Length: 228
Ligand SMILES: *Cc1c(COP(=O)(O)O)cnc(C)c1O
Image 1: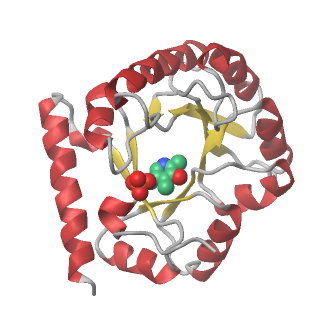
Image 2 (image 1 turned 60 degrees about the horizontal axis):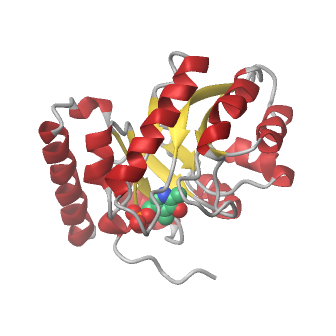
């Protein structure tokens, strides 16, 4: 077992506890997802042995492959956090327990149409907090329209919002906008109270804003191997 991995995980968890205490929040209301993209399935096994139960992947092929390789581990929750293509909806749906990146009606429809009978998938509306419309996520003004669309699809359970803070702005300011988007979603679906925000560089700010799901990669895994 990699003791450096255990040390980094423990250090991040200490910082999560400190940030929760500073924000007067119960740490039990915060789910720490370890983003394992580009790392081999063996790393997920090591994390599992250290108690990690939530992992995140941003590419469908990698999600599908790792989930198959680790099919013997029943109690891992797989979060899909990357751009989803409509023609891969069935594979995303088969590989993910939650999809954080629903940013247009078409992908919501594709995930819904790919549903096995009686299956319900947790989904979040991804919000674009930048000024660049080319980035992933729906514009904040369009969040309630997309939330209303998703809420009408009975094989999807709308759980809340997700975003990545822009690089050129203080994360706390961007997360304020995300919090207003979270309120807009709750106006449509009152129990959709997940806020997926906070990465290696900004998770304390995300906790202060009210994030319920942190997506932390390199602070725990170490640097990512180059992508192929
Ligand atoms: C890679 C990734 C993360 C984790 O990034 P780190 O900076 O390594 O913590 C979080 N969210 C998304 C959407 C990502 O693609």
